[in-house]
Image (cartoon, rainbow, N blue to C red; front, top):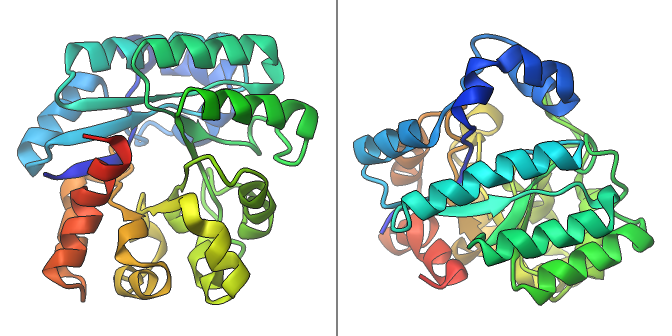
Length: 279
């Protein structure tokens, strides 16, 4: 079973009226203001999955800054997983600073079949991950509904690019240690966090933490698959393409060409996700 743990889809109206959403949300604008920035609908994702031989995709939302945009796009994700229950798994998003409304939205999405919250963008959502009065009830709701938390992460070095952000390992680590009982997925290889797993206390803290490979081709050389497998174990890595930013086939080809055993490739491309999602 092949599972892509990181894909993005939007309602057709977002694709058709891109400029309106650019005006409404700075995070969306940062990522999609250029016409060449691809926007995909659910049906386009399903077609891509069929071409790539992918059984299941996790569709994740965006870190919208307003509660209203979170709800609007969450509706589409919930509708999509209801239409394709055997092909799609949904992660919804909230604006934690909406407080009670955010908690209610987590509950609504969980009832609607969502399996996680993400892709959160704390920096774009003006959210301090150490702000206990906001973060504590937010994470408690995620834990209560047994949801997975998926967050964008950023590399503290290297080239800049639209949407890179500032959620670096030094910000992630205290958040992770404060929430040991929540399963956390750090997108984009955790901004390099796995490399600190050589420190025993960090390795221990990463007990419930996973790393997806989203956009890896734009960030790292292919050796990263074998290196991170050595650092944290292949059982901690989740194949994620970041479709439609990258074709789903591209990351699969990279993984299959990496210096990994067949067992490790199987873990990364599907088995880890299958266990995590209880499929």
